[in-house]
Image (cartoon, rainbow, N blue to C red):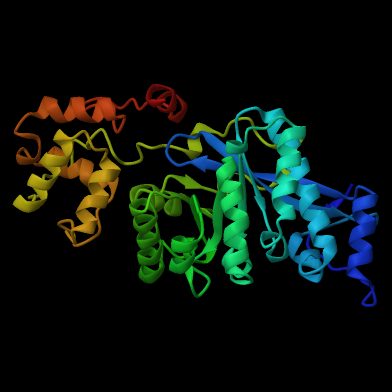
Length: 371
């Protein structure tokens, strides 16, 4: 049985290019896939392809163990072309999920990348909208002008472009302005701290708001805990990726759907606790809520709007979806004094099943209802 662990080749005199060429020829590389999920619904939107090297000695090498040694060499282009082709082949088998592949600095400035993508999409009859290329800020900075030209060609074909590890470089906003990006992926170093570090939480919230303001998708990487997922969902982050949902796995082991227990969009939102004591809701908060309720906004949208205005809860905390739900229940002003209206509102929006009911529809039922 092969062991899945990080290790480096023992021979310090090895030739990385020659060894990688041999690995490609011997078909020792394998793609693993990690789901990218829609927060709050349980729907798998797509997967990210991650390469692993299954060495003949039974050790499985992780990307950090072998990619840096060949990152700026000609063999890297061969490896990238191989990854794109295998990823497109698997995407065609899965029929509907999007497929994300990582692109190295040496690839993103080469017109040959467009040719590789074109050939693979054609060979596997895959619509270009189902493929996304991911590049880091480090890769982009190697040749911004050339990278822009290559990525523009891919975008003209319908291929998505994601800026990976967003926030870890020095010119993130410049890339958002100058590159044809369709999505940003928030680096795990910030996501890891959202539960305990106010600065990390503020950075993540700012990235989400910025991305949404300029019409980009957002994926939070490295989500491992329920608290992280709740925070991200509460600030309007739509997608997540991480060990909480699934570890990278070969195609045969990727789940078709994930447990609904991992995706409860109704967490703490209701029905209201009958023992809950009503809290006064300031007039400015109540009127803002009333306006957004009338517009049909979700609890998450209302929370984001209140936070963007600098308004705090009675406990002097940032607004979350559950806090909005409780405030709406407490404030006749926010619902025009109509208790039934807020019950209907939350039921129709899928936020809670209604006062007096402990039943909450499953995440997959909610997804089917709203799509």
